[in-house]
Image 1 (cartoon, rainbow, N blue to C red):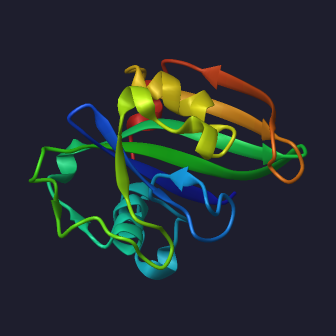
Image 2 (image 1 turned 90 degrees about the vertical axis):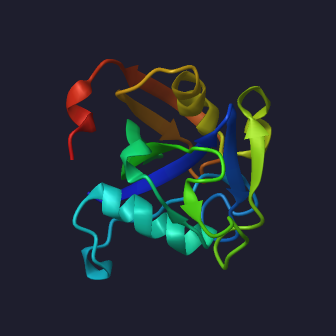
Length: 170
């Protein structure tokens, strides 16, 4: 099974997003992340989240004790399991949470922060609001199953399993 990460930096009641430039979701707002890759030195999903953040944002996280896995999302397309995505929040401390500035990279456009009540869900992948809204309201340790139509144009169904603390152990 393919595994990946998705990391959302949060800071003072806001979240940082950037438009994807490539692959699924190109042109839509997203967090930072990508595939688990032992070939690139990944030993854990946290390694993947940190590596992908550096590659996609141009900055490096500091204070990694503030990195928290809040959910796992299993994505299906037309009934076929695509991948398992580990979703992380990085609870940033204003001005002290990353080295360098978040910037446009080869994979991601210019980053922008949004107030938590102003996240542009209409400009994100169709399933993003299904898992981000409960996570933004403080829920944790959730497992989501998302069923996309062929082409990932719409969500045909979803399920949520709550209160599963075991997923927070690497």
